[in-house]
Length: 166
Image (cartoon, rainbow, N blue to C red; front, side, top):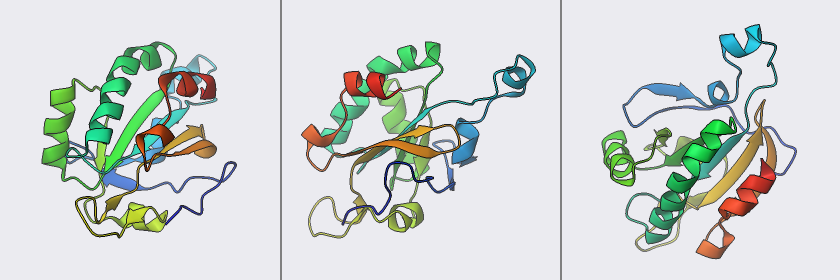
């Protein structure tokens, strides 16, 4: 399956529990803070949204390790990063801690968002019923700027591609 979402579309504004089991709404990651608004920065933040198979996938592990290297650069450039998988929050918390990741991992354990955007892998085997790996680069307001389909690792964005997108 391939998502029906296209560049220029608005990404669905979903709410999922994070690695601490706290509900998080996607649009909150792109909105300016109260201090930003007071200072006149009202545009909001770009967001890199990564959908992965989960902690067990060697390709996801490699991608997440690269993103760990990128997280401090994102912070000083006001970019946001969020990962979504079907792993339960406790598994995500352990994976995140083991990586040294500082960004939120959201759990779509019931696969509601994954199904809604049509990226549920329904094939047989070790990756069945997880998300097909996709990375969406979103503008403030959740407008899709770029879509990467990473079924194979070569389809996932490099850090340089993400820099250019931002």
